[in-house]
Length: 314
Ligand code: ADP
Image (cartoon, rainbow, N blue to C red; front, side, top):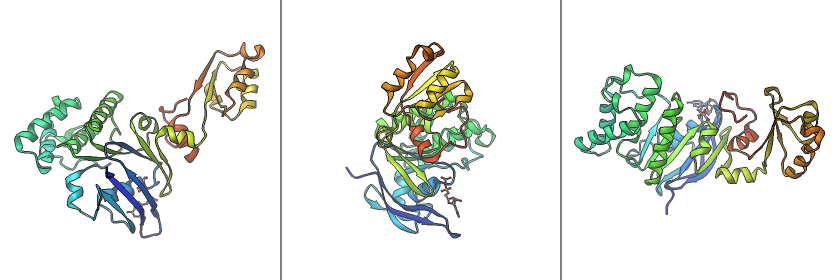
């Protein structure tokens, strides 16, 4: 099966000397959720803007279903729906009108567009707000309206730039479930995000970008294996004796929070044996074995994220 996207030696240099895409090559397979992760400035937006024909590459090329794309390409317009960071411009329309019009632009009849718009808004849990004017909605509702418009008429490829920004956790999880259903129905989804924890739940494969390059690419499982990141132990109730052993075992993280996290690499057995020493064990409240996460892979490339926030694993 031909890849949905085939990116080949893609390079974008901006005037002023920044190379925002530096010789990128990768495929996005049909029917997968492909994550693009990376901190601000890594080159994610520049990459997706080229994938939708809004920015012209300096060199290299992008094929969509096997065909080379050009700026403002009709093939891209027909097949790819792009949810950008910037809010929906259709401020004077109601949510339902915006979604239905987008559906019609993509070839649905007015009746089909109307029906599918309502179904989509119901699926996103904002069916009751279908007649609200977009310009008067909150940031999160505005984002959902944009997402509903992006999903109108079921485009084969969805490129979503931070689709769950500003959404509360309940709605966020509804959005992920909906995208999962779309994927099962055959959609290809490219997801740009810097929320590593959310990405791990939904992506099939991920590219982690750094300074215009792909620092790592693969399934989350393969990336964890490649980087040889192995289990950590999380200890609470740490006494001086426990802390001493933890330091001996490897790098200790987050000691300040009252939890001690030790990356034990391949030495789990030896680590557990050290902790089983009664003098150490008696001071321990709890002990958890943590398998490596995509966040560990990300941190091994980028160090501590700027926006650690509440989403950190520890
Ligand atoms: P991200 O989406 O990961 O935050 P961007 O693709 O927006 O990254 O930016 C990558 C780099 O390219 C940054 O150094 C940014 O300053 C630069 N850049 C982005 N857009 C332009 C532009 N239009 N002109 C010049 N430099 C740009």
